[in-house]
Length: 244
Image: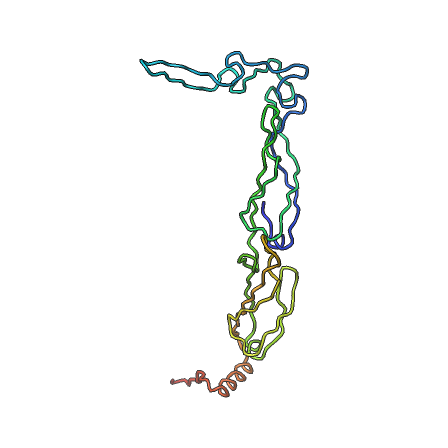
């Protein structure tokens, strides 16, 4: 089953279709026509196995094989059920509800007791195992109960400080960018991550800001940046003449 990171954060109950073999409702899994009963196999005396004994000198060898008459069942159905054709099993597709806990890890396996295939000859059903995979998110990466994302900000926002909107798994929140923030600085939003599967509370959201340098500038913007560079004592490319 595939789920989203948002599903991991909130948990969910999902309905799935499962094709499985069930005990026939007409013969209750016996394979015999109603009103009749399977008879004991005379070949193996109901054990489902045949013993072959071979003696060689002082040694005695015993080989056990599956009965070729009853196929190891120990019983023979003479009057076969018309609904299941004597197999005792019928194919069904069932809708089964699967409860996905909060904070589940990708690759986790959930066991649904007695929701698997029938045991045969009227025996109880086995278990159904559901393997859960978490889809890759467009924005966030997961690290245990924490989520991580990169957020681009402008040069002036990093220099002068700003308040920006950042995404979370439950909508956008405001994040304050202090003056003089450097690129790749990581900010933490406490409790905005994923629930801890085997613990209490939630993880955090880690936001790494990436300062974007503008690629195209107007003449006025270039002039302002050049003046700023001079104020900061930084060197800038000089204008070259025709012969330079």
